[in-house]
Image (cartoon, rainbow over all chains, first blue to last red; front, side, top):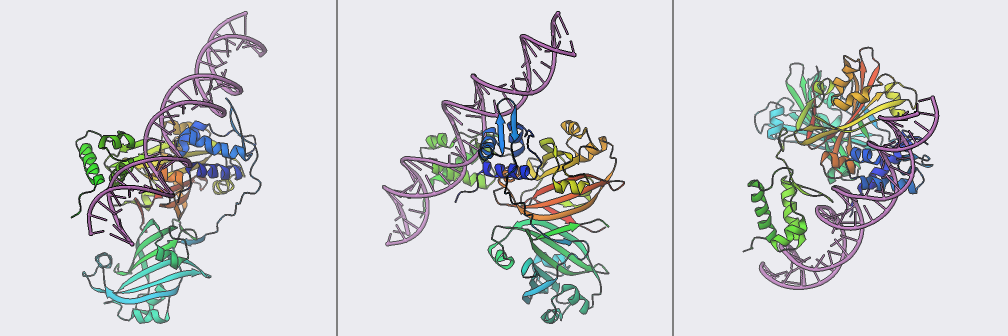
Length: 236
Length: 236
DNA sequence: CGCTAATATTTGTCTAGTTGTATATTAACT
DNA sequence: AGTTAATATACAACTAGACAAATATTAGCG
């Protein structure tokens, strides 16, 4: 199981840049030394990539002068992946559509701390998927304090929206206190849920939502499918 | 009653020699072949020992070059992730930068659109790494309109900070119009730069910075090493 | 200005060395 | 028998350095 060679990815990068007409026919590419610095490799590795592109007629090199663009690739797929855009400031939440789990259990130390509960105090866990059409966009786990919302588990039996569930349980409005974002690799089970290959990229968001008095009401973790979702942050 | 494996004792020997500063940070160890000869074992047995030390962060091997002693982590504590606040990310950026490339070329359609330029208008590209101590945290590519900043390429020859470079080119203040976040997989060259394994997770941030009049001055893309960085967003 | 010579760049080629990976085999211990 | 550690071999991928050959740039000079 050999990984893709570095020179292959360098060649692909340069090819896409030529295809995008960042360098057009007749242009001189940066020197081999400059490209080696850019990609952080030895000059010979760059030469292998350039040689590949030259073999395919995209480049032509002239000793002493430089490497020049001959022609852009004729059939280069420029199909840009369309991603679902979600503004994190506005609602910061995708509509939940598919329930995976609703259960009551003791809180972990992390959850207890986030929700300002005593260690081990019981919480309601709501796990599900957010879909767009039939493609899952995100996988989420929301945790609520059972003491404050004794009936919320039943609410989720008929309602999928977290916002609506909180409203029906007496929280008219809530705001996001903090969001933490990290990139992660999909575990096999997550890949299964999100219909990705395992090893694909996920964006993990951990958020704490508080009510009007600043009391935490939800601890939510969401894994967005990296290739389908973009989070946008626009300052007010 | 299992005897201690040979590779374990080799690893212990090498570790003690590193601890005794027989080899210090940045030093190249003897080649695997030389070590194999020294310990009177097969090269693979040495490799197992080296692999163990590499896993524990004491060594780092570069194909074709050798095995090097890694400097102990300075700024960012291992196991803990560096957190970046949105406000910090907007105004003050990441410090210490390493230049990879400064280049003038035609803009891509995406860049032209973001910077509100005519298609293919020339831009200055500044690519580099943001370091925390000796660990790279992020890989960035910043694009500036050449027409407005004809001398900015030269500015970057002496200055690494984007903020400072813009200031020296007549932009006293700028704000972030929009940020888009996605999770991606590291390409082989990105993995090299960020010292990650091929296929690790990155958080990609695409931002557009505008001047006081709302005119775009920079199109910046940053890839954060997912396992080292957490982006925290707190509403104002 | 225009030409020439010297100098600096830049690609081409060659040799050598080093780590990464794959496969197969042997010895020892359970 | 089956598992594990270690060996043996071979090749691929990448680095390192040096030098030659072609071109570009610069300096000097008329």
